Length: 371
Image (tube, rainbow, N blue to C red; front, side, top):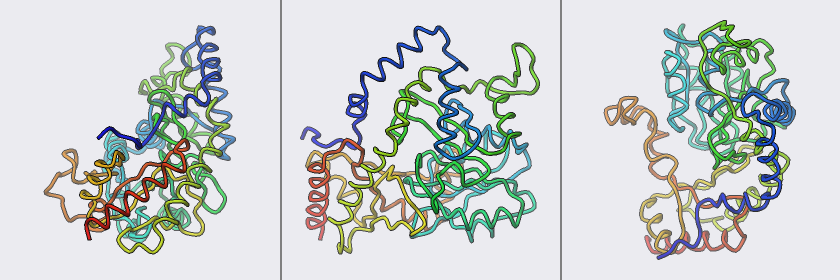
């Protein structure tokens, strides 16, 4: 059956701003400056102001944002970095890329985010940092994480790749730790037309080191001060992000309205484990993820009705070939149990309310077929 409701429709989002995007791209093309130019500088100022911090440093990806922040803080071989078990593998890979060791900890059943108590229990004399992930666009418990970090003198890097605009007690993601790492992958709430990322921080020294590291360790042409990398956010991507940033809050509100519709539709349905954000969290609903005992059967039933759903994530980092594989099964029982039941439903700012209603009805029908 042809797909009638896609999980994500990037074309609809681009169509809304087509004229502005065309003007922005033409502006860059006409400038003749395609890297480390005025568009990037302007976007860095604008995104820093949006997040409520002094600095934003554009880089090539969300993975690079975490890696370079760790390196800028002097973290590497011999160090340990605490990461949640339930996340995309990039969170762990960024730590490994520095030579440090990612130390996984389990997550909270209620939020899918890192368990602060288990994080503290995992601290050793070698622990240098903790990287909480704001999974699904819902902030982790940053008050508790901050307390752990303060008690043990740990650097806190928010993995905010899914949380552009999310708030914790009124403060935006990216301003809740020592630094925030963002991805601008096209499917994100704030997405570019390719890969991209950024680090936000109030730390002047950290920002200066990040600017060096992203550009070969070079302060000016051919004056190499440290061993850096090539990790720059291109002018074209920065121009695109500048067009989208003023719309981010409205797009996030549209996501929240659809999430509320799903919540009403599934209220009282014991077979659906729904998101329950804590009172201090203002999520941006990057994903609307439900837990289902018959996940695969329900996904197949939705597909038969022309509705696309996705699993985030069928293979957790510790079960991947990069970090132990199947031999590590059972290491993080909560994360593994949640992952086995997780199904993400279509949700994006341009999904019609009728489409949201159709997805909800189809899932309820699928559940009745399995009971």
